[in-house]
Image (cartoon, rainbow, N blue to C red; front, side):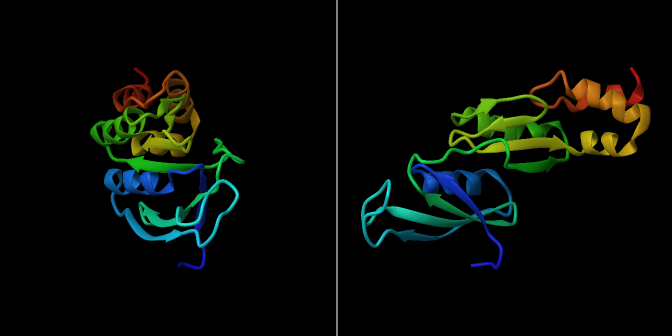
Length: 158
């Protein structure tokens, strides 16, 4: 296990979540799965307790901890995309697998984990500062999934 790992709490579906992330995102894999040696709050001996996995190169540990805690927007993965096709692919995979749309490029997967699907066109416009950033930001504020063409139009001032 790496020295620093993100631990994500799931009610009982850490393995299914890890498998979904590994199918959906590049540089993502499911690692060792550990079963509970005895009963624990929210589970029984033999059930999957933890799952090691990697999402876009980031080491994670999924913990099946029961219903005591829920995911929140206070933690999210931000996925940088190159174009509209890649943005659509990730967005549609998350939302279409029982997830939900949110605002400004954010969505949630079916386990409640938040994702920011962020085209580089948007981050580059924001980094430009000034009026370009203001126009891109104003355009973004009207969106759920980011529309790259609309961001590029805002950058041009059209």
